[in-house]
Length: 176
Image (cartoon, rainbow, N blue to C red):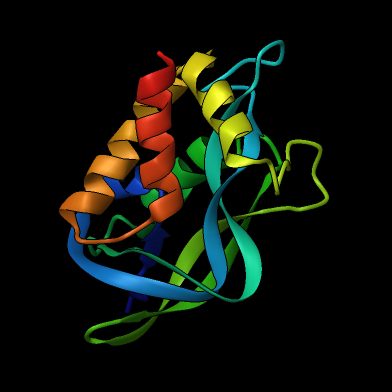
């Protein structure tokens, strides 16, 4: 019997999971927060002009609302392979398994968290600096601002509040 695979999405996975989804649940991950704390040198920036992407940054007492995705039965191995190709393009993310809370109970989910010792980690950047970077960076998957705006729009559609991302979305629009 195949074990059920859940994946926790907090950024682009929410709006572009890239794997077959059997079920979606709003979920909360305790002691972590969503943050633009990773310099992107591939997808949303370059080595010469890094962008910023979201990561789960450990923060005792915090909570990150996102989406728990149950992967379609039979697609588990292909999903893990695809996620590793997408998320582990550098070693800045750590693949881990964490417990998330949903309205239907707790599930154990695969998640990608930031390695705070990695050179791409940039936790604690002021929001105005994040906005300037996001407004200007472009990478292999397009402008950094599109990544921000898509994430903000989908969080809003799901009823998930993230005041920092809302502020960043508005500020980046102002800057450009």
